[in-house]
Image 1: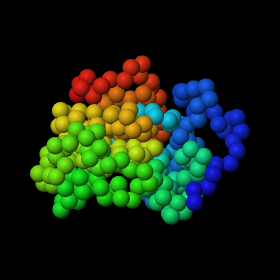
Image 2: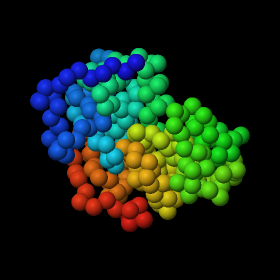
Image 3: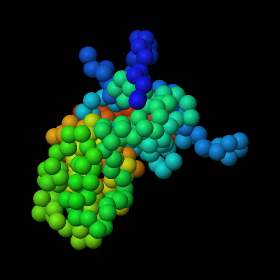
Image 4: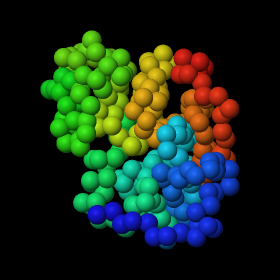
Length: 258
């Protein structure tokens, strides 16, 4: 099982500088002092360096930064796909740091939806069947048809991946992630392999999942234009969050220009 987070002091509970502090609100993700290193000696690579962050229920957060800035490492730790070298990460009142693999598997299955740059659909299954694979193991899934309708693919239910465009395949991947009604939707460069107009369709599907499913959403990108659709933008560099910006108004994907 995931361990419950012990009682914290007021200082421990205070958000990092630049974080919102809504009255009575509790962050769903908390990271304190996260470090992640690979290799040893002179070959050591520091992917994360003493990183603190809070992410709040229902937020749409964009992690923005160049390759190697630590974005994917942070997302993987929050998603239970990787563990830090030191520091701690928690989801709600449960510790992710130090949890065993069975607990992390249950966490990923029950609470997190993932969308990656490459769609990873099963070629021999239709769009509906690809989504149903996840629905079958979820605790309280929506119908596959409902998830595909949310991403605008009701007319493509019985098409195979090879019969779909790249943008349509990525929207199937979004539907597959949201069919379980996840608490968190974690997206790693979801538009990286797409042209501008197709990318906007995928971003619209992600924004709709954030709004209608209520999933706390974190999107990794190196495309600064996408930052306009976020509640907050966390700019990363050198394994740290170097700036936090809040948008007064979230732009719709069709308003983005890049």
